[in-house]
Each structure stands twice: as C-alpha cells, then as structure tokens.
Image 1: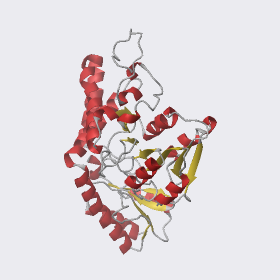
Image 2: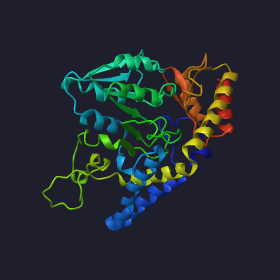
Image 3: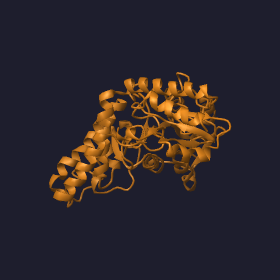
Length: 366
C-alpha cells in the first residue's frame, strides 16, 4: 500500500487508496490501449470474469449470480426500478441509511409504492421494528450491512429471515463491509446485494458488483438493456431478443475495462488473505484504536460488541473543533472523516499500531 509511506490512512469508509498491484494493472491497461488499441481487448475482457468469479467466491455465490456494475447506487436502482411493483406495495428501510439506499425507493412514489422508513435516524435498528413495519404488501426489506455513520453492523440473518417470513425479498447494501467481513449467501439467503469496490475492497471508483439470487433473475426486469444484455452479444446483426440466463443481463453495454482491471487485482489480493483472516486482523486494529482513543478521553460512539462491530470507529472528543481538525490532520499526514458529529475513523487490515499512535498523539495535542 504506497499510501502508507506518507499517510496514516483512516478513511476507507469514504474512498480507499489503491494497492500497488491495482495501480499496476490499471496502468498496464491504459498503456496497452494507448499503444495497441483493441488488439488485446479479449485479454482485458477476461478481467470482468475474474471480478465475477472472485466476488462470487467472496460471498459463496455462483459467478452467474454476479453482475459487474459501476456503483452501489446502480445496483440499488436496478432492483428498485426493475422489481414488478403493484400500486399499494411497500418497501421497508431504516431512516439511518445512506441516501443511496433511501432515494431510489422514494423515487417509486409515482408507481404507487409506499416507503416505510423506520427508526429515528440513529444506527442500531431493532429487528422487531422491521418486523412490525412489514405486512402482506411488503415486497422488499432493504438495509445496510454496516452503517456509514458509526459502523453498526446489522444482524443480516435476522433481517433476511424477517423479510422472508413476510414473503418479501431482502436487499443488502454491502459497501461498508464487503472485502473485509465474511458473508455466505448459502447460509444467509439474501436475495440482492450491491457494493462498489472503492472502499473496503480497495478497488477503483466506478467498479463494483451486484448479486442477484438465481431464482430472482426472471423476477427482476433488466433496465438499460443493450447489446451486452443478450446471449451471443457479439453478433450485432441478429433479430432475436434472448436475455442472458445470468446476472450479465443487467450489464447492458460497454464495460469499465480499466475499472475491471483494477478491481480484479484488488479482489485477487484480498482473496489471498480471505475474509475470516481479514476480519480477525481488522478487529484487532480497531479494538486497539478504540482503546487508545478512550485513553485520551474520547467517547466511542460505535457498538464494539462481537455482534455489531465493524471497521468503522466513530468517536467524539470533547473540546475539539472537528471542522478544523480535518485540515490540521491532513497537514499532519492523517486522513479521516467527520460524520454525524463524530470523528469517523476507518483503518484497514494493512494499518498498523503505529498509525493509531500517530493519530492519537495528534488528537491529544489539539
């Protein structure tokens, strides 16, 4: 991670820096295309399938259930707009969600879909609140795996079970956990999942993945259908309209090939570590960070229990002007964010105790 040479980087919940292999893959693609145009296009196209395969392995899915997309927002939109809604249907979603998991559902109002927003805006939703909001017309329950404000990790299995008990489907916004936390869709029958690669997967912006459980492929109407949505996509003169029998039907047109090269390299790097080892390491570094922050009087706003911890540590330090701290931290070689009135700190598995000490020493001096 070249970023570690200069920065103590605690901002992976916003945008992650790129690993050296990812930079190398993207640079190689750009150089090759500058020098050779489409001569090597088939070779670079294989990166899309590598992303598909590695993402599937990461969550226990089949490659045919993975679509290569641009962003979490795109994945949510494909589900929200592609679902066969009927007037009077409803979707249940917590108020504490990032806007990308609220606005696409709100945009369904003209189609007669009610959005039941629960909670007071604080992370830590009780599953019974979700249960109480569902009824016979609930079609989708949507929730973030990890909240963006304090990093509260939901009980995915419990929420998925509640949705299915009401004959609804479950959508998981996985962007704040995928890459460093284990998840198996064979054990937890999530129906839809989306995540951009630019946070915990250490990939470039504009390259992500969507999971659609095989049984839902025919239920979800593809949007922005194009040449790449159909079987025999390279045969441009055919008159038939046969959608791909897999999640590739949602990919539409031309791929972000440089993004695919980068994300494939990042996923390959994380795959070598594995989500269980990554989670263990991330727990160690975030526990240490929380302990050091408490030693200087910080209040940890994140739930650090075994059930709900994540890679995000939100902290409030009395007497610190957070708007000023951001700029001064950058001057000191430290990257962090402010969210919901707290310092939001998000290290990664390559972060070191020395990074935490550097951050805490800086905050102590404020």
